Image (cartoon, rainbow, N blue to C red; front, side, top):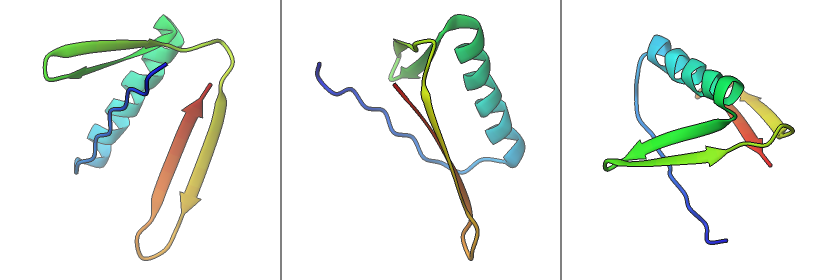
Length: 71
């Protein structure tokens, strides 16, 4: 299978980031898939029942939370 990759980065409010995470979580829970739209093209990816989840927290001058879900 050929690699398909979408990477997005941008600045938004904490509340906007939370809404985006909620939407992703809701899609995973209700529809068993995630959906991305870029340049008018809608891409849906089915997600299996069991996934690997990795959460990484870094606290320092610049802090970050990274959440990775893989299968």
